[in-house]
Length: 215
Ligand code: ADP
Ligand code: ADP
Ligand code: ZN
Image (tube, rainbow, N blue to C red; front, side, top):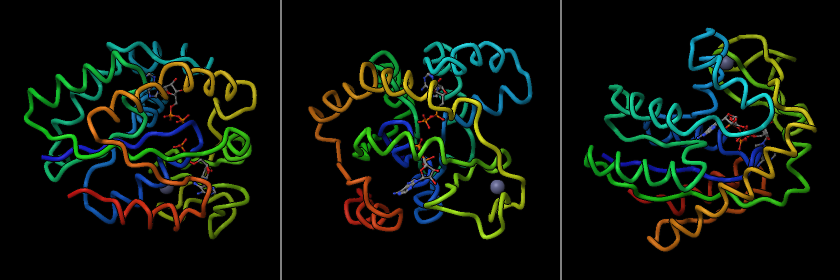
């Protein structure tokens, strides 16, 4: 079984590309952010605990996050492989993932790193609209839905995420630079990082991903 990671700053386009990858390569898309948002909306204990951190733009505790991923990859839809979006986000999580993959005999194939300038991220995040049902991301300028405010894929009404405001974004960016970006070095040493230019149009980013895809 194969595992892929997609990394990048908040708003870099991880979820957008992971959704295209899922459709194209028929592998599962696992987003820890989506899982937390689902837990929050169904008011589970995990959701209530994680919400305190997410609202401030901080990372949820590692134990909860690793547990969620561990359970999730047991799902049948992961049998053809899966891509992790938003996990790991710090060194402790990366080491927990190594252990998990080793135990389950899963191979980490590549770490797709979407490169962006911080300058563009605020507009991407503040303009993002999200489907609360299927998690597809839209943008008020760069990726409008066919019907205003409605998800193309499932017809649900789009929302703006509570943490997608300028203030919280700043802490999310700080957390990214301090804790998550250093993981690129960790994975580079293992020869796993594939960089793609995330400042191109969505389709062009995806074409670059396809060109460098490791089977
Ligand atoms: P992430 O999962 O990394 O936070 P998303 O995939 O949700 O990022 O994308 C953030 C926002 O930017 C969304 O509104 C999305 O529609 C938009 N977006 C994603 N990729 C691009 C791109 N290459 N060019 C322009 N806008 C994009
Ligand atoms: P982004 O679009 O900023 O990349 P995500 O949807 O991946 O956002 O994550 C939203 C929030 O959920 C994060 O700011 C963080 O609070 C929490 N979160 C998501 N994934 C993790 C993780 N692997 N570890 C800890 N917290 C996480
Ligand atoms: Zn939808």
